[in-house]
Length: 251
Ligand code: 13P
Image (cartoon, rainbow, N blue to C red; front, side, top):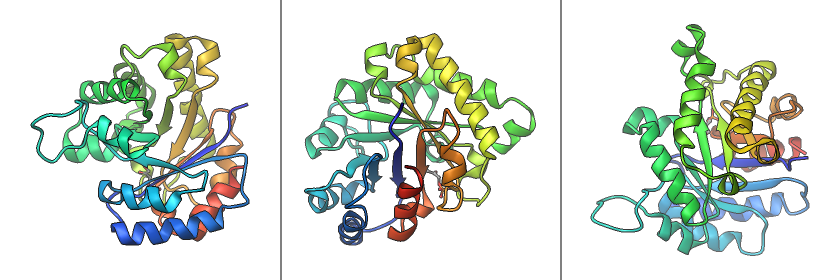
């Protein structure tokens, strides 16, 4: 049985001061909740104040991106060594906004995933099709390429610490959620790919999140699906009430 995992992707929202105040409230709101792993992924400048504000809580810290090199002349970038030093546990990699707005390729994402494992960070690896791809009936083919290229050269041992987030691009920030059955079908397909890559035992341990307009109202119907183990939440993770309700709804 996989423990549910709810992560908040704050994207480019909340200043460091706002972020710290938010997690102090969130900590209180979630203090009696158990049986679920929870992470918040603030923007880089808020990582340190959020880490301090999270002291004494089980809520984990995640980042939203990183470079794959340890250090170097890469103006504006943040390295895995820096995230590790900060106590970051998870790092979102391959988000569709990184792919679409910043030109990230499957090859680059693969380099980042391998670097995350090297530095003891647990990737939340995002995959998902666009509306046009869904309408053309090539959802599985697109997701298969993303998974296989993104996880090239990843070992079974490393994969134990992997989370995959299936986020159909057309469901992100649009209020449109995939039906639980459609989301399950793709998540099941992803798990079959993981069986081929890493064997059944490891594939059964990998948590697969659904992402895209997850709200308190739809978390229950998603989480009961056998291959959906949690959610990567954008907009609804920015409010203590809605994020708390999603976390509680996942247990
Ligand atoms: P929304 O929950 O705002 O649709 O965003 C989903 C997402 O992109 C999480 O990574």
